[in-house]
Amino acid sequence: MELSSREPDDMFAGEARGELSPRAARALWWGSAGLVLAVLGTSVLVAGAEHGRRLAVAVVLILVQVCALRWQARDPVAVLAVTAATGLAVWALLPAVSLTGALLAAQVALCVLSAVRPRRVSVQALVAMCLPASLAFGAGGGPAGMTVYLLAVVLAWTAGQWRRAQQARTRAEMRRAVVEERARIAREVHDVVAHTLSVMVIQAGAADDVFTQRPEQARQALRAIETGARSALGELRLLLRAFGPDVEEDGAGERREPGPSLARLGELADTVRATGMTVHVHREGITDGLPAAVDLTAYRIVQEALTNTLRHAAGADEVSVRVTAEGECVEVTVVDNGRTPQGSSVAVGAGRGLVGMKERARLVGGSLRAGPLPGGGFEVAARLPVERAS
Image (cartoon, rainbow, N blue to C red; front, side, top):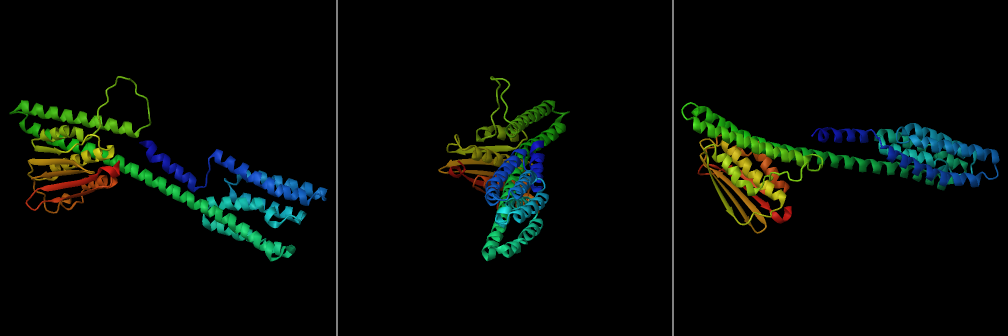
């Protein structure tokens, strides 16, 4: 659980600072260095063929640019300044090389800076890179040369902005996935713990009331508490195993407890019956073979509805559970005969348990309604499509 709460945040922080993994940084360097050597290096060799000393200096300047690109992901501002200065020096030594080609490394650095730094910083760098355009115009390149240079600079900055937006979308999706996973874990823990504790509290109160006069009945209540606690521990173990890393079983013959499903609806009803509540369970249709998500959702809805009956339904002594599997949907209905207090959050559907049930139904494409009945009692009714969840 600790990994789920810390690792994603650290990863998002690293991306926000523009940090790349060592492997990605090396790939970026090799790619940009190869591009500069192939394009600018070839242009310099051709343009400086008759200028031996100038050619040697220009080659050294190109090597400086290639080396500087090694740190473009870590400090793109400094790399942009170095590559721009050396690029202008190459262009001054060999005017036959176009300004666009001479500043190719600087354009690569501008693209990276635009992707990993705030827009305010990248816009300032874009403006600075546009200033040499007048040099291209004055050196005889004319409007065409100036236009080509400006288009190249703007294109490099735009490519960086596109990459920045793509990274922002990825971070948003990852954050949303983490939030949804945390919410799912919270719902599972709430459903397991809330139901078991509600039953245990009622059983403990009953045991205390009859401890002296009817010790055997008190023992039965204590045994019910033990059974409920063991069941909850088993479910929590399954939950932790499901959310933990994949590991091999220690023993091939280890018996694994079945997970919560409609097949265990009778066990769930028995835990509530142990509190003195009368529970009627009706099944219609075949519930075996349901998609795992629908099966678990239906079980959790019944569990939470029974928990709400124990905790909130004043005077309730009877509850009816009906599960109907017909066609392409499963319908779950839980009705009690209690009196819902006026102003209760359960009555208006604002309780955490009801919100969780509605969210569970929504996640599998279904719907849920809950509220007091005109003649008394409270009803929870859910409709869960089978085909859509499968």
